[in-house]
Length: 286
Image (cartoon, rainbow, N blue to C red):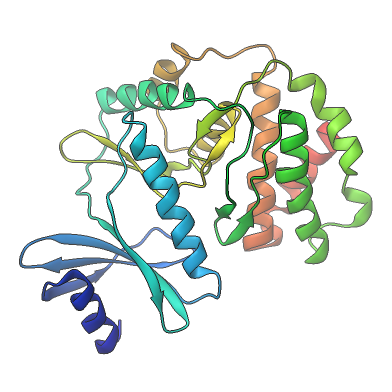
């Protein structure tokens, strides 16, 4: 962090900064713990051209979850441009390793969040998944939304980047035809949207906080699918969740179909190491 930027952050906080410590965990932005004589803060910094829009969308998603009064999010303190990039300042949460009780509470809270519904799938604005734009144009049909707003855009990016060949990518019509039998009787649920093990924190007081959301209204199993892709959640979490929202005969298939979206995102962000996983699911379902 440059001295000028540190001075700027100090002026925004209206507090003298005593310590700046890098925080690991993010692939997209740099992160720091900022300590003053009064408080600790969490600072995210990104120099890309979309960084302000990315942080603005993140702040909006955090506040939308907070307004449900179901599960906590860090308080959004400031979001603005700086030079060619942008930064976001959040409340700093002192974390601990989750206990069995914490996982159970988290499962119940996530299920309750997923019971917050809407007339349509999507959201009133777009946001980002990692650094990739994520369109949320509303649809009444989950099949239409998932094909048009999730799978097809990522397939197009993968084609443009040369990660997939045209003969490996199903058409939009094929996607809809193949998905429709799995997507019956699904209602919109408020989703975190990117719920891997690094996107929640349990505070030292035992409260779960959601961070880095890519929020929209979609099928509740989307969050479950992402949570299972890279682990980081206990059996107590899933048992508690499914005691409120049970699985059905097509859940395991849908989990893989939803994981396909996240694997495509990782293919497009991080490259060919995700190719085989993507292709296996494309061949299985399309």
